[in-house]
Length: 243
Image (cartoon, rainbow, N blue to C red; front, top):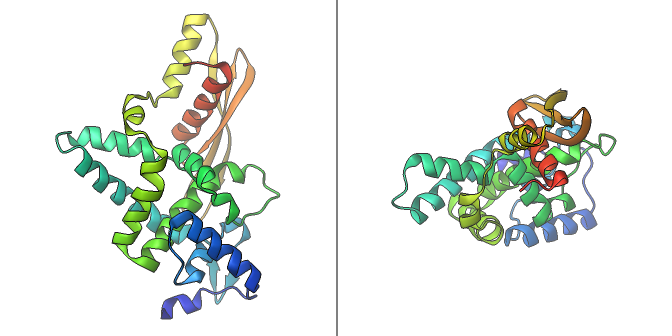
């Protein structure tokens, strides 16, 4: 507990805010928070972070931790579920589950938007931060409840209810290739353009847009240019109803 006493906001949140966060965490994770400050920190995007005692309080460290714990929990689950599949198969399926776009979609479904705190003046942030906050929440559950209960949260509340693994296995995750092939078949020019690169203390966030015959279509976001383009390609495939 001692180290977490340092990580407190200058202004103490209201009891109503505490109750709201407690209810949201219980609804999302199935657990009542033991150390509420962990979850408050998990919800704090760097765009809203405040500096206290020389430390800028945001969820980026918890995001880093949660990313590792989430990957380990999913790897453990897949390893046991598919005992005769090789490491290439397991790695690919795990990647499809925990990639940025998948986590953003999952975070929307489970209600992460109810707890995330960010600078609402930047509309693009909402497209990329929900998955980050979900990872930070996993990190908070791990520190608050331990690995076994955190793994149970990941499997029981995130993976099993929201991922049909048969569909995940059969899906073609390379939307960029699918879109380019569609363009070639239909005589359309397809190009990708990087719109912006936003630097944070830990990583860079890319935004990219698809142009079909020089007309703008889907805009995507990700921690790499490739992931941003994949996100943009997926959204364009949805807009053009490319199966």
